[in-house]
Length: 53
Image 1 (tube, rainbow, N blue to C red):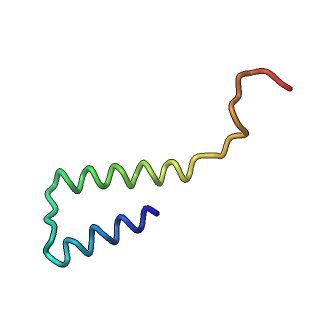
Image 2: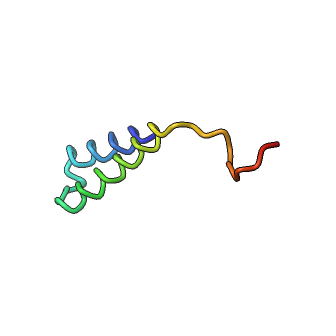
């Protein structure tokens, strides 16, 4: 789903409907970085409260 946002932003800029400033690029980069880090995080086995079943 993240690639859909990237393509929409890129096409808007290419068609002249949007202009990217350094602030917008930095914010977008941070969002993409957060999504990549979340995707790379190891999957947990549910909430671990220290109790075993």
